[in-house]
Length: 434
View 1 (cartoon, rainbow, N blue to C red):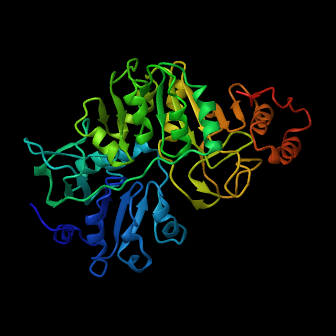
View 2: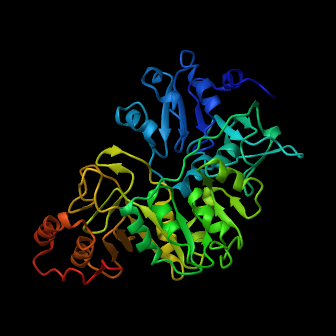
View 3: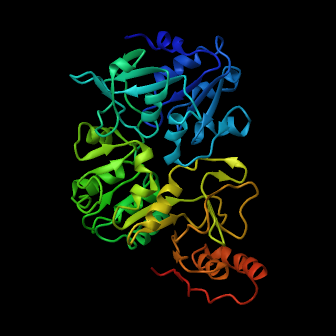
């Protein structure tokens, strides 16, 4: 049934749980219409990953009506979470679909953003299949923004129009995010990571300056594959130049596999009806047993801080929630178990304020996303620390060797106090010149 956005969201009732499609597929027309009902509704819980736009339902004057419950906290929700007007649910990306399918988080409604139907009546979940497929399969009421500018992605995201209670036609641009220009620090990290990537490896990486710097440094590689939870425009040159062929993948050989994409119109046009790209349920893409099958699986993930024992904080700054657990552990573990796989944590040695990201102790309240038992390679612009087989003393010194030079004396002093004077020589366990 074709309706206006304001009419369609009248299907949402008070005290219901509503899934909201995320990233570039955020259904902004529906979300804004829902937010306009704030005076009519109470106790509506919204569940979602990162949302593009200003998250109108999370504004302070609408807190009586809506309670966002985020699996991933973007900039538009950090203040709401910090102030207690919204919640953060830490969970592996691979496990979110099971929360819906098992009934642990039953959904009353889902607000989706889809492509126009094809000749057989099937729409596509477009740029984000990820957790949206499970939501669409389990929610009692489906409401969709049907956008002529949403690409038709192939893979898991096809839904028949008969499943929807309301369809809202529109023709609006998708949110776009231009690739960031890597600075000298990111470029140095990118080169160091590229040196760790073997020809024929299968890659997972996220969005941002460091992943894009890695991709720029991989132009001389051959027959790379991609099995990743998301990708952005930075991957396109490697696909167009034939560096990424997916020729040696164990699953979906010849295809680039992801669960969502976020970038510019060029990227959205690239995935439209492209049989060489599959967007699939993140319960599949992020399944460690699937990831480990890929040859030379190389997972590249970021961190906010890493302590001297190798603990990785990636979703918070102290007690303040910054992002989400996401798929980091799914891919770190899968890559480690893969034949000749490599799990890589990458971060600049300093924050924008000149504070060391390699730390003696994690900030109070910080959440450990990747444990010290799972970490293998840690990369900064100063080098590569390979922590395999290293005890706490040895890994402390390996990490000190790739910390910012200005922070090393203090880190050395902290390490000696904690582990004793018998530290291995600087430069022995790490590879700062790599």
